[in-house]
Structure formats: structure tokens, C-alpha cells
Image (cartoon, rainbow, N blue to C red; front, top):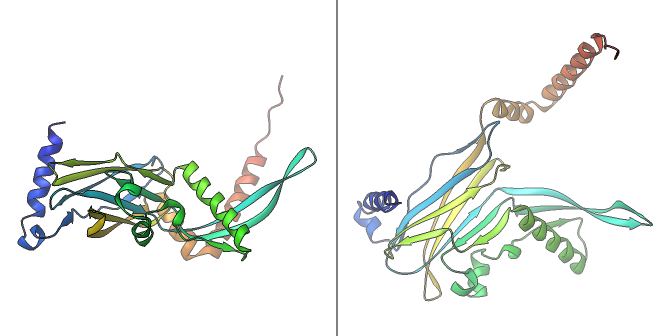
Length: 249
């Protein structure tokens, strides 16, 4: 593991070459390489590397593009379970990872956590149709429970490593079923319960290869793509039907 400190020293040297950067309380190396999703994509490792001015606590927030989802509630009728109410949820990020050097609740006050969106269940979610307050609250709680259970919302206070109270590196693991779009990475430096440094970066997640072509065609020419896909399925069905089936002996 000796290569990690040398790598961080190299990054720090690059970050502090400019005098203006050296005066900043928090500097994070930007990540400009997009994440490409191919047929064998099973997730990706993302690293945030930077430097801070002296001892402090770090928080990194990784946020995915907004998502529309439909949730349903099963209802028991006699011995059977059937699908009951259906509600559309929207406006919440598809992915929300919170990384910190210590539990966030011990670093910032609830007001500061709310201000910077550092509470997993504090994310705003639109509930359609509009329901009464208590009913909407139940659906929101169910939404967050599902997100946390699936691993799309989570908090980790062990992913950031700090070297010499100056250098830091955070290891973030992206799941295999990412939503296409722009992801933002916010880094906060906290000292004495106050945010003294705040940087925001972003990277793109996009499809690559045949997946990208199919995605573009389906969104740019939906009627043509749907018609051709239906025609192709019909031709394939006719072709398979033309082959005689062998009877078992």
C-alpha cells in the first residue's frame, strides 16, 4: 500500500502548484472521465482525491439524477395478496451516498445537515396524487426504506482516508444498475461544527456501444423505433414458426 501515499503526494503537488489554490481551505481533484455502461457493466469504482487546510472533518455527498418511480401497496383479501393503491413518486435522486470521516450527526447540527441535504430521509419527494399529510408521510417513509434496502441510499463513515491531516482519498463503489445522467459530487470541510470549505463537481454516466445506439434511437425516434421493433418481432416469430418441430421418439 506504499504506492497510495506517493500517489496522493503527486496529486497534492498538482493541486498546490497554483498559489490561489494553495490558499483554498479545500481542493478536490476534478473527475472528468465519464462512466461508460456496456453489456458487461457490473459497477464502477470512483475516487475523490484532494487536500484540505489542516485538521478537520470531511463529508462527501454523491447524488444521482432525479428519478420517477411508481410504488404500490399489497392488500390482503382473504388468503390472497393483491395489488392495492398505486402512487407515483418523483423529484428524489436515484442515488444518494453520504461519506464522512465520522458519523455526520456528530459533525454537524440538524439544521446544518438539512441545509446541505445530508439527511437521507430528509430528501424532498413529490407524491402523486396529492394525499393527506399522514398518508403522504407513510409513502415517503416506505420510499426511503426501499431505497436503503436496495443500496441506493446509504451513509458510510469509513470510506474516506486522511493522510497527515492534509491529504484525503475516498473510495466510492457505484452499483451496476446506474441511471443514465449527470451525477454530482459535493465535498464539505467542517471545522468546529461549521462548513468552512465546499466544492461541487460532476461526471456523466452514459451508455456505450449498441446500448447507446438503441437508447438514442428509442428516444430520438420513438415511433419509428417501436414500429421497427414490432416488425422485427413479427418476422422472427414467423421465421421460428416455419421450422418444423421434431417429435420426441
